[in-house]
Length: 216
Ligand SMILES: C[S@@+](CC[C@H](N)C(=O)[O-])C[C@H]1O[C@@H](n2cnc3c(N)ncnc32)[C@H](O)[C@@H]1O
Image 1 (cartoon, helix red, strand yellow):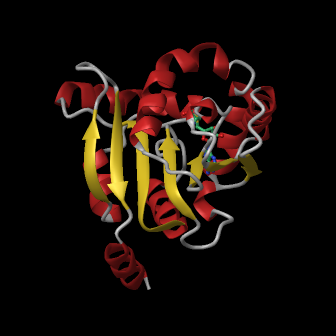
Image 2 (cartoon, rainbow, N blue to C red):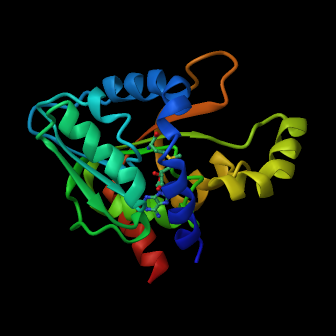
């Protein structure tokens, strides 16, 4: 199972992740969390919370839960939560493909740079939809396969190397949306030339039920 090797890889990444990754992602996650418009008392799940880079961007009036597979990454997130005195944050060790939460538990779910890390992105979205309340918000920040054919070829070619580093580079966003029936409200790139996209979707119950029936 890939999750076992992913855990090992991110336990190693945990030692130096914060040295360079904030420079790449912090502006993007902060902007997305601002757009989430989280109201007082609302609940947020940060899936694959990692070292907790996004934690300081959530409003303190939110109830934030972060989950991660890697003890090493989660330890860093705990240190961050203590350092910034964020007692409204709950950090949980667990697998995003089998989320240990009841249905409809969260108002907002953030998947920041995790859909291309798990072994089964479709299952991840299905689990995310299960724990998000009907009408709740699902936000995905990630790199997806380029629409440019040359770039897409390069990404496919680089994929085996990327997988050794802990992610895949060939996930196609349109395929993911089609396979999960995810209802996308809008998506954007922060800069004109940007490897990453931010996708905002609403958890429409009718679609979720149809999907569950189809899977049964
Ligand atoms: C690239 S990091 C992203 C961390 C953080 N969200 C960010 O944007 O900086 C991917 C994270 O997802 C976690 N992860 C990978 N597979 C997972 C799974 N099946 N369940 C929970 N977390 C997982 C990894 O341990 C790692 O911390």
